[in-house]
Length: 146
Image 1 (cartoon, one colour):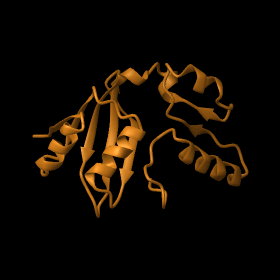
Image 2: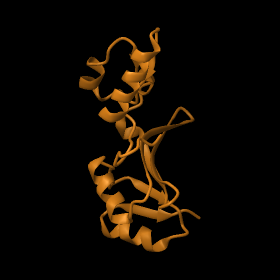
Image 3: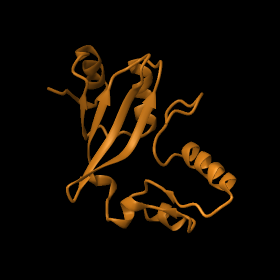
Image 4: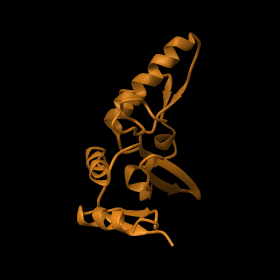
């Protein structure tokens, strides 16, 4: 999902949840929202209203269970970074940065702002080794996919 004018879109951010809240209110009926809050985020879980459900927490998925990031480079087409986790044989998308018309340095800034964990491996589009090297110089554990 891309919000016009937004620097980055990431699951669980105030911008996304406020947009969802607006649409849920406009629906005028019972709506359940699924929110990407992990089991070890107790303060956030305690603030959830009854109409919001946190399936990651429900199934015991913690932030530490996000084991890898994947990045598909783009400029005119989207540049996407996904935080991917595995639990009980299932794959989950835990976080997302999805942007257009940003250079590598700008995207690194967005990743820093979104608190992308530099200790976690990021598997990247192998077609652009220069971009992988830029990410590595910025302290990320980027590797080309084979």
